[in-house]
Length: 317
Image 1 (spheres, rainbow, N blue to C red):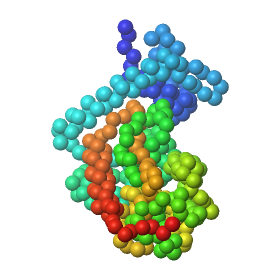
Image 2 (image 1 turned 180 degrees about the vertical axis):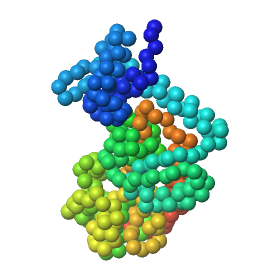
Image 3 (image 1 turned 90 degrees about the vertical axis):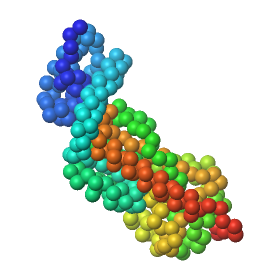
Image 4 (image 1 turned 120 degrees about the horizontal axis):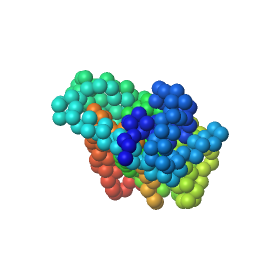
């Protein structure tokens, strides 16, 4: 059987992931006609139609989707072999582009950088803070090596793995009157004035489902996709917000923000690492992720110690 050249395989991958010959050409620094010719050549070699073409869109056939998945695995294996060779040669160098939500930049990132940067001076770090939609788009367009975002439905061109399941906390200021670190049952609180992320934020769907399913009364709702502004506003008002524990661990004992674990039942958020399906993580990326996982585990240990059952401590309903 004739061998399909790697450049043609990459063209098939790009068209499948982009859903467009034009966007695939832009991604591969090629012309649209060149990408189309590569795909047509693969179809002739295989004797199989890989894509259904229509005005404005290109969709893989069942055979095309299966071929794409095998191609991604093959290209990934080649990249993994190259990374292993560099790792065995002791080379931890090059660029590392990471996307993080404010959930991870506020408390997790600084200790990770404090450990990683002095150890790997030959790694050029670029860290982008943003929300899930922006970071996902940047990973898809190959602007980031990986990003950490809330778990979501899979999509062609991305692969993901669970990084952490984190517990959600209610955050308020002193004016709201809650006892620091005492468990709070939201359904038993007075109607909440609640700051939430916007409707396009993945965490918003989970919050809405929880509020509706457990009879939580909301007196007023303010949508805000601005983490620093949210925390500043909550600290100065009687409004509250709900955030993962990893972002609020440094607020323990400070008094500017009051943190309460949510119970009856608990509320959790799953966060995943996403990366382009066609790429393998570099050695420096794997090491950075390992350091993030270690720091998240340390934060969870701090929380477990801080909110262990305490007699006589009750939250104001």
